Image (cartoon, rainbow, N blue to C red; front, side, top):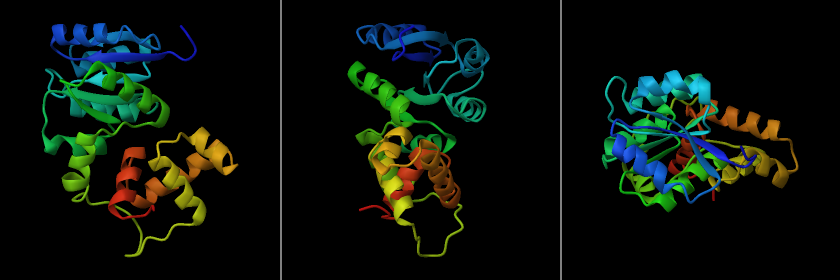
Length: 218
């Protein structure tokens, strides 16, 4: 397998759709599907054998749905990114799934080029935000989230924390941020972890929307 190749798994109980997604990704040589599953339970059972970088996961599946599956994967395999790929254009699901650890949310009528971009983005930065998700999260879901932070009414960030947060929102990776700030990637991760703990969020997506909601970046 090529060093820069991204390995992908897909879980969907509709085999024809599943095969169609795999076929549509064939032109992109840096994306390789290594596993398919009919439901969340089968997906989780197969993960240790194949260890994909990214998973495309349907929302509504028998045995174990996409919500429970995402929770389990992000807890047991935090290095794997989950993108929800569903027919449900329902605002209720988006914020909840992101809070559960999903790295992106795509509709099943999405063009192959966008699926490819989402796979590459979540592998590189940890998340993918398209206009649909942005609109829903900013307008509705994340504005209503109860963030479990331990701050006073005024949120005060150090210059270094603000710079890291700004670069995270610009979709730079920890390594890229480290290079820009002339610090170690470990220091960047430590700052991100500290901010996530303070803000009561679980991943980079949560950091981005907390920052946007509270106007923490310019």
